[in-house]
Length: 161
Image 1 (spheres, one colour):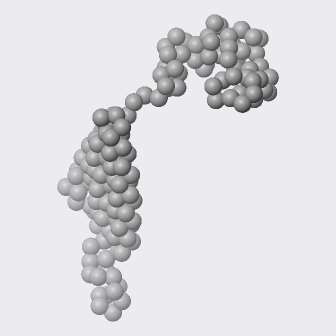
Image 2 (image 1 turned 180 degrees about the horizontal axis):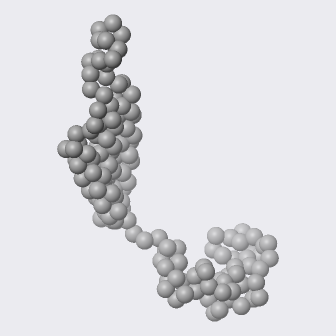
Image 3 (image 1 turned 30 degrees about the vertical axis):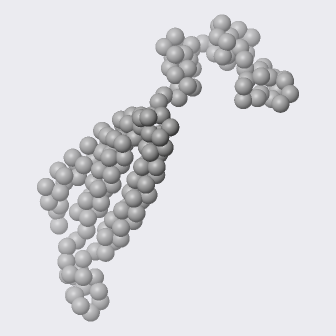
């Protein structure tokens, strides 16, 4: 049995819209993307099943029974999508409550790495390990200890905690 072209197009549109929304910064849009992806996956699983009678022995001939596995997988996918939806709703509500918006901000470390990459001082350039003591004037690299001393979260080497 070949799948209906309409189902295939709807699954494609749901996946495309879901991935597009999933890549946004707003948690509300991410939530809508997860829901669309979940619905697209459910429809994709259902198109893989065989239509037929109820899969109960004695009521339908064995060759006319529908396949119960896609239905069971869809029920599992519904539960997973519901859990993700609840988590993202709680996350968006908490973000809205604390910040007044639900947009995900850049991480401070991500910004620092992007700045290093923009200045061509990131990984992949020559002599960034600091083995010869030359840190190319970067204070972030100068704070890394040369020996096995313990480092506190503030970056202080050798000091007591």
